[in-house]
Image (cartoon, rainbow, N blue to C red; front, side, top):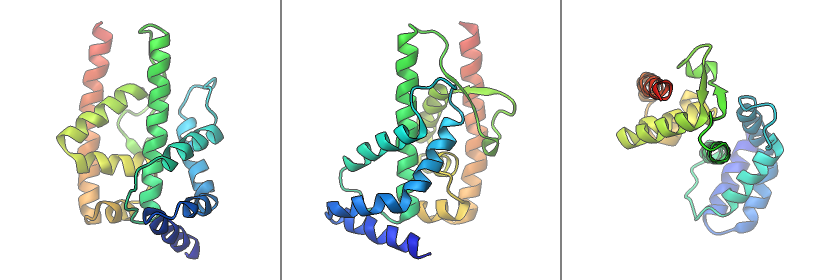
Length: 194
């Protein structure tokens, strides 16, 4: 537990302008960041040019450049790191799609926890687009998906970050899964029609 409070204290110091706090924070959360990266990379194609360590390093560089965020706690930091990693992978997927001149995009299987498409693969770009559309429709619901699915946070940690009850998180989670399933199914139909 001391590890978590140390991380939170360092995040607060970093938010208040202590740039050295970030350098002290990284060793405390590095293994968790690597676990997030491994989780993402497990769903990528085997010949992906990024490895988990490179993904963590790229996220680290981007997080260093983040304008002052008022960090709430370790879970908030990990959620932002997870979002950053997802954005990096989506950028890679879009770049690869452009390189292939519109060819089929990188396919990634969606995690069982999402339960959106059992035994199917999803296009990471389509998933990102669907999440962006969900954010326009209901930002909190989109954040709940980001935190739970991509950030790997528990229901309670997600509730703490969003400042809502765990019941609200579960309701948002269930509704978001149904919404995303509809959007991804529509995207898949549109893709197969072209």
